[in-house]
Amino acid sequence: MSTTVTPRGLICSLALVPNPKNRSVYRGLESLIARLQPAVAGLFLDPMFWCPDANHCGPASSSLLEEAIDLAPKDLPLWVRITGTSAEQTTHICHQLENVCRRLKYRGPLAWVDTPLFYHSNRGLPEYYQALLADTEFNLIIDNNPQLIRKIGDTTKRKNIRTAVLKKLVQEPRLVALVHRGDLRRGINYQRAVRSRSDFLVYDGEESNFLKRPSASGVISIGANLLPHEWRTITLASLNLEDSHLGKAGSFRHLWEAGQRVRTLQKHYKQGPASIIPAVLAAWGLISEKSKGLIPEEERATERILELLPEP
Image 1 (cartoon, rainbow, N blue to C red):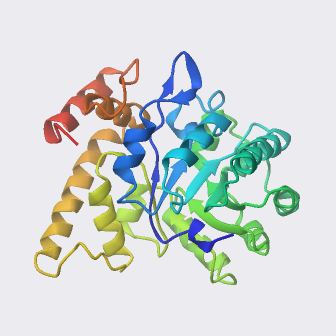
Image 2 (cartoon, rainbow, N blue to C red):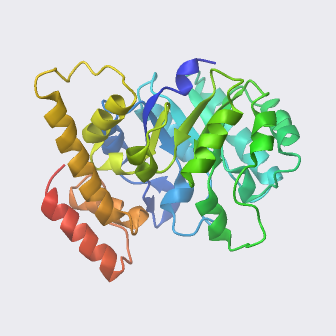
C-alpha cells in the first residue's frame, strides 16, 4: 500500500449533503471534488460528521465510496469512515466497502477511518484492530473524537484513547495515523506516545487547534470546502512545505490575508458547520439545495458568510 495515503498537508472533510429521498446518495459531489482536488492533499468521506444525528447517519455507504472513486483523481488519497455502532457492525461495514474496491479493481491510496470508542472500550482495542486488519488490504487511521462520543449521551463512556493503549496500537504497522480532536496537551502526549514509529502521523482534527499550534502532519478541515486555496496556503506554510505557486514577493501578505479570511469565516460557521457550510455551498450553486431546518443563528451566519463571499 502506498504511503501517500497519509500525506502531510490539508485533508478536507468533504461536505456531504444527502438526498432526502435516498440518504445514501449525496448532492454536488462532482462539482465539490473538482473544486477541491487542486488544493487538497486528500479527501475524507465522513457522513457521521455531516449528519445531525450520529446514531442514524454513520459510515460511508457503498454508493458514496463508488462515486468518490469514480470522481476523484486516482492518486488523491481517500479516507473513508467505517465506524458502526458495534465492533461486529464496523467489521461488516469494512468488508462491504472492501468488496466495492475489489469489484472496481481499485488500488489507489485509500484508508479506513474509525472512532473506536464510539462502540468499543480501550480494553482489548489492539487485539480488535489486529483482527480487523487481517481481513482488509487497506490501512487504518484512528479518529480520537470525544465530541462524537458525547453525541451518544453516555456519560460513563471514556471519550479519549488512553496513551498507554496508543503505544500498543502503533505496534501494528498497518495502523498509520491518528486524528486528534480535543485538548492540545493530550495531543502532545499522543505525539510522544508514537515516537517509536517515524512513519506514524498525528493530524489535527480541529481547525482552531491547528491555527494556534500546527501539528507536524497536517489538518482535517471542514472550512476548506469554502476556502480551499486559503487553507492550502496556511497549511503548507505551517508545515514548511514548498508551494510552487507562491512566489517570495508578497508571499507573507498573501499568507496573512488567507489567515484573516479563514479565521473570519470560521468564527461564523463554528456554531453549526454541518448545516451552515452546506447552506453556503447551495447558495453558490455547488449543490442543488441547502440543508433544511436552519435555526435563526445559523441563518444569520450563512447570510454573513455570503456577504463576505458572495461567490466561490
